[in-house]
Amino acid sequence: MEEDFFKVGYTTYVNKQPIAKKKWTSKLLGKLAEHKFLTTIFLIILVCMTMNLWLIFKFINILHI
Image 1 (tube, rainbow, N blue to C red):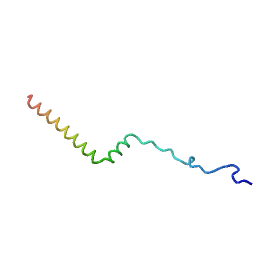
Image 2 (image 1 turned 45 degrees about the vertical axis):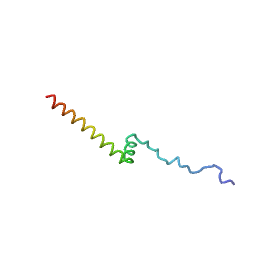
Image 3 (image 1 turned 90 degrees about the horizontal axis):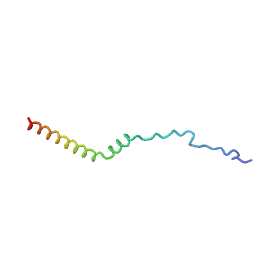
Image 4 (image 1 turned 60 degrees about the vertical axis):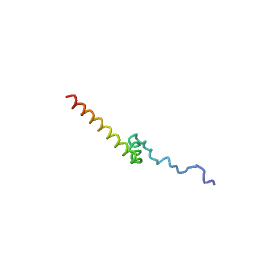
């Protein structure tokens, strides 16, 4: 008699959990963590530019008065 009569076997699809999609925030945080040095340099430049604009604005307000 043939052993593969019903051709029943084990499949991994039965017990497999659905793979959760990565959200865009997780992807962004992953990229930032991967490139820490460039992120730090970019944030320093951004803070310096913002501080410069704020100081110029305050100086203009002082001159205006």
